[in-house]
Each structure stands twice: as C-alpha cells, then as structure tokens.
Image 1 (spheres, rainbow, N blue to C red):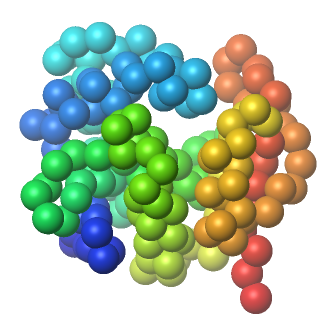
Image 2 (cartoon, rainbow, N blue to C red):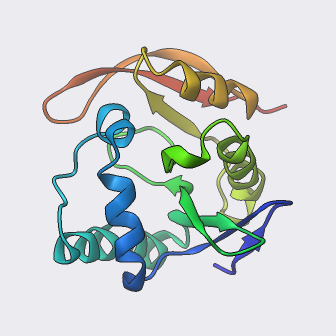
Length: 169
C-alpha cells in the first residue's frame, strides 16, 4: 500500500525498524487495559509482533495496521488500520495512540481516513470491537459512522465486548 496523508497525519506500512515505537505503544497502560497485554517487552518481541501481525497482513490482504505520524515532523503517534480476523464477520478497524496525543482529534482523523480508503481493498462492511467501559473509543466509532450492533464473546479467555458495524447508505 502506498503511504497516504490526511491534513495532519501520515500513514504508512510498518517495517521491523519501527519496533521501538511499537514496543512503546504496546506497553502503555491504556493499550494494555483497553486492547490487551500482548506480553511484548523487548526488541525481539516487538519485531516478531510487527512481522507476524501488520507485515504479514500486508502480504496476505494488502492492508493492515499502519504507522501513524504527524505530517509536520514524522513523529510517531500510534497506529490505525484495517484487520481481517477469522473470529469476526467482517474486517475490523483498530487504532491506538500514545497518551501524549489523546484529545487532539488524531484518532478520529486517522480512523476516518481508513474507513474512506476501505473500497481500495474491496471492503464494504466494517466492524469494530470495544469494551463497554471504553467510552472514548465508543464515541470515536460513532463519529466515523459505526453503530452499536450487539455484544459478543471475543478472545481467549472469552471477554464480553461490544460489536459496532459501519452504517452505509
């Protein structure tokens, strides 16, 4: 996938050289609480996570989680993208930012750009999963056009999550 930009953000594929940034993101308290503890604590683990996750997804599907940075200086702020999971009925949109970049509209901007580009990958439907308690993420999903569908059991061990679906005209 070619890199792309919004007004303030640049999105591109991750490479293994991005491991320090991914390691930092995966170990923030909010990422662990709201997305999950991936148990990745070192360079080797972060490189493997990138290789087996986003980089593998690019090869298999042409899309995945993308590195999000500020256009003005290429400072890493987080990740956002499209994820095909065997356990969900449609492609999932996922995102996570470093805490220093909360409250500035960056997550909405990145997620809206990913929703807008889904057609390039032949994706019509889109879903998202979120914990009931994660109100900021739930509000973000509604801002980009997803609505609450129903509660599901997801993961191992199974966890109650809310499934949001994209509303299209």
